[in-house]
Structures are given as structure tokens and as C-alpha cells.
Length: 72
Image (cartoon, rainbow, N blue to C red; front, side):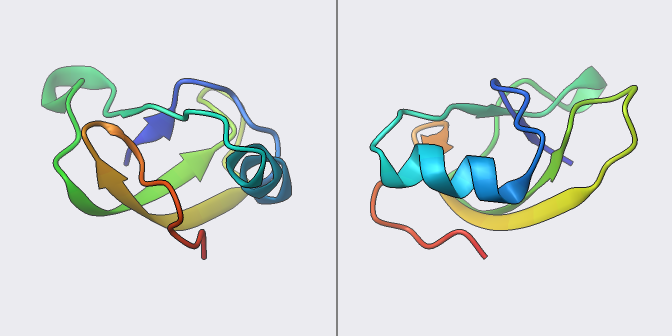
């Protein structure tokens, strides 16, 4: 699953950064990345090797979380 380039420790931190207008690029680690297609994506965090504690459904446009999209 994709990650953001920032290692958010919680989904709340991701939502707050997005609400502030921070540009948040996403990528797919490993042999399937780094590009993430435009459209819906499921993010996870925090980054490996920490255990994943949150997942978020987002809309991606041009490799970034789309402005104005809701993070669920």
C-alpha cells in the first residue's frame, strides 16, 4: 500500500496537515512504485518498520493527495 512522503504517526496528523493546505505527495515503495495512479488510494502509516496503526482512503491527483478531498 502507498505511503505519504511524510511519516505521519496518526491519521489525525495527516488530516490536520491536509486541512492546513500542505502538499502531500504519495508513493508506493518497493518494486511496484514509486508512482501512484490518479484516483482512489489507501494509505497506511506510520512507515515500515513501525507497525501500521492507521489507514486512510484518499483521492490522488498528479501524485499528491487531491486538494479538497476528504480523508476517510
